[in-house]
Length: 598
Image: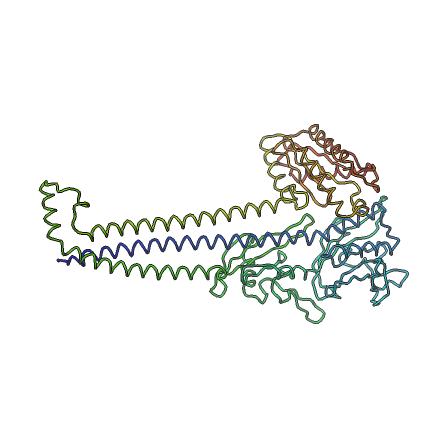
């Protein structure tokens, strides 16, 4: 079989060109698809972390106010026998902590005093059930001085001891979250913490609570930017929804009964698909793509837990179409360009073969002379066919252009990858750094403590932990204001940080006015020296404190615990020992250091 010169030159050239274009197009498509998926995963994780951080601030408001009121009652700063003082305290807290919906106390004899925020108008009301007023739950307006005003509603009989939050606190004997429930006066679900309180002689005073309306989480989620059409939800581990970024409610009323919706029962099909997947998986945290009506949707699920037993799921759903529209448009353009270039290449091959056919005899004679050993000079320089040189020049130019385009693409991909890495590093730094004091936060503390505990266990070396609490900090805030209180925390954090002499030592803000210092490879004597240096450093700050009970300046109480890690022990035991020592120091009069027995 014989072929024409034109067919012999054009067909292989065209096939080779199409194969190269297809290979480059496929490689570009796969690279773009992977970059798109990586960016989508990064965005979903960023939104999930942002929501978890908001939940920390949101729920910590209830915990903080309950603990603060309990401490005030134990210390005698707040008298349970004076309802007016209780009302003013609770109203002030409600007004200064915007996340709170209820702050209350149920006394041991069943009486009740509380303050609440109206969810639609943000006004504050006082609710009481007192023996002197017939033990009915009555609602009052609040005067400008936070005192109880005129009664606006008289309710039914009310005994605080029969309420779930009261009984749950007595059963737990510590700070604990009571179950989600529907507010009677408001169209929202609520949840809160309750804490039993006893006086110095161990006599029960009652149960204090801090309560938050979960509708506020929904408002926050709806205000977030979750791609173009993404959704987010917060739910309990059993699948019952807490809040979503969609306007539909997470519960419905059937007569007097409240029916809470599960993730798999919600109206949005993406949330329903996430619920079906979560129902069949024992380990729900992580990321995966779901098929929702033929559309790929990325699901990012993570656990949110606090130290008092609260356990929630945070879910983010991002449709792939939010990110793929521009990508698909670009890929269509590339395909059309490839076809256009292929057509031009075929035409170029036809023209090239025509030009090569004319000087064929001369090329053949030159080839025969070369075959016979007759050197006729450099073929490239001696050839009389300009088209051959033009083809070589065009090919070189095309190769250079392709190299330049590919190099530019690699540069852009490298820049985007670096930008994503920097953004991820910054997100990790923010997530592990306390925003006020700029030292490690509680999350970073937990991570470092577990790492150092395992290291000390492997190397069979001791580890020490200091727990610090600013003495009479609530009184300082009341006397000098929260701005001054924040300044005190910043300066004490600097003292703690200055005491860290090794790269393995870590100072962290544990919560509120509490700090913690992790000292790996440090025995009890070394830990005591660091504790004494911190205590002295705080005293040297010479920050005046007129309402302090231990000294006329700001001081700290420090609990010191040292352990030799053992497989039968855990890092939580070290925290408990240091915390026990801290409370021993505070009970002993504050402004001192207490150490647990070795």
